[in-house]
Every structure is written in structure tokens, then in C-alpha cells.
Image (cartoon, rainbow, N blue to C red):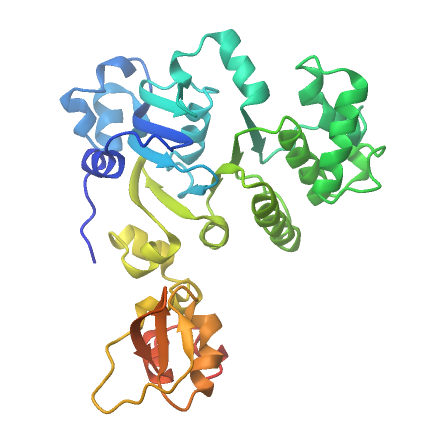
Length: 365
């Protein structure tokens, strides 16, 4: 395993220069709660643990020197246990909570330098937020709840209802435009919340544990809905969750937080293949490697005498999906990328990877 870098070092290495193509760029972001918050950042106090800082100053560092970039169209997931700082982080990105230090750029604009009027404009048009609690107006119909974000922007009723009907169709609420929130299930209410956030056609969407209050089956349906919407619309999303399975399912990249700092950041495959420390290893312990890792993880050089007559599979295919092909091949499969041979693999290579995993009996090898 790789050794985890201290928070400051990890932030610096993860950050670097601000890429011109970033939808979101966060640099050295801090949020300290307490009577002496301003005296923490940039002083030796910043190096104290959370417990030590609280004992010495009465302050809590909820977000500690966090830096990252989110590419346009990326789903960037932030996850961690309760109290890790993930929800405080997303509220700092939108300035629902004022950061203590650092910078946040959305589409190149410094959010922390925005005036109150400019910030309201950005929230109305450039980015939108979806929370765990739906916040629907109980006395308004679905169409009017969705259109509310346009109403506060001064859009006339006919135009905002027309747009609301478009997103009603988009999120699968056809036929429910005139219903009231109390007439809808939890999952349908959250669809209204998604539709309301999409109505202004935002560049960036922030979703703070939007499905954690839903039943497991409804939650799964809503996860699939987010995947579909992202595929269809290509929105940049920052998604907060405490559920690793949800993070693995939705995220292009995942940042794992602990005590306000980012412990590790990478693709789901990065985290499963190379957890930075025992904390991350504990998180991913119950995730079957074969469900996340691609064939690159088991590709090996051709052994002497091995035939290259087996089928050809792209290296980006997940091992679980490729296992029936590998099991049915009479010779090692050829693992390729862009037409170039990366390596070969047999069912034995797959079994060696998953021999200690709970999903092994379910594979047809």
C-alpha cells in the first residue's frame, strides 16, 4: 500500500496549477469553526489533530486544506463518515457556509470574491443544489415547484411552465405536473427536486446526500436516474455521500475525507487497487475487486508456449463482465488497448484475484 500523505502535501500534489479546462478548481480550502478561527490557518495550530486543536483553541477544523479540480462533465464524489467534513465542504463551495481561507473557482470565476448580488445570480443560473431534504413547497403543484427557480429569476409564467414541462418529461414525472408533493412518494419528490435544479440549465450541480433518506430500492432507482441524466445532459456534478457502493456506482473520481482532510482521491479503480492507508482499506474492504477493477489489473505477459488464439477483449472492461468470456475461452484471452496487446489472462488469473473475496462463488468460471 502507498503511504498516505499529510493533508497539506496531498492537497498540493493533487492541485498543481489551475487547469484551464476545469469546471471547478478548489485550492487550499479551510473552514474553521470557533472563537479563534482566523488564528489557525497558516500557523503551527494548523498541524494539530482535530482533537488537539479543539482542546487548545476551542476550534474545530471542519475542512482542512482541501484542493481538487473537477473537469467539465465529470461526476466528482466526496465521501466519508459522519463528521468527516464532506457536507461542510460542499456548502463552502456554494458559500452557504463562508470558508475561512482558500479559493473556489467555478467556470473560472472566484466564488469567494463574488458580491452578495452576484452570488445570488450564480445560484439562480450557473449552479444548482439538491439536498437530502427535498424542500418542496407543499401548497404548490409539481409544475410550480419546478418552475420556482425560474420564477425567482423573473421568467414569465408561460415560459417557465414550458421549461418545467420539459424537465418533468426528462426526470420521468410525466402525468404528475398537477399533483401536490404530499401525493408523491419519496422517490418522486426527489425527482421533483432534481427537476427543479435542472430547470435553470445549470453548468454545475451540487448534490448533498440526496438519496440517503430513501428506501434502498427507491435509492437504487434514483442512482440509475442520475446516471441516465448525466449521460443525456453531461452536467458537471459534485455528489456527496457516505455510501461507498453509491460512490463507486456514480463517481468518475472519488475523494475520501477524514477529519476534514482528503485522505485519497482517484478513480474507483485507483482506490480499490491501491488504498492509501488502513482507513481507505477499511472503506473498500467489502467492495469486490472484480466488480471495479478492469482487465488491466490481471493482464500479464504471455508465458512461453502460450497460444494467442483466444478472444480479444478491451483492457477497459470490468473483470466481472469479462469473466464469462475468459471462462469460455480455450486459450488465454488477449487484452488490448487501442489495438495494442496489453497482456493475456486466463480464468486462473481471475480466480487468483478474487480467491479471498465474497463474490467468488457467484462468478461463472
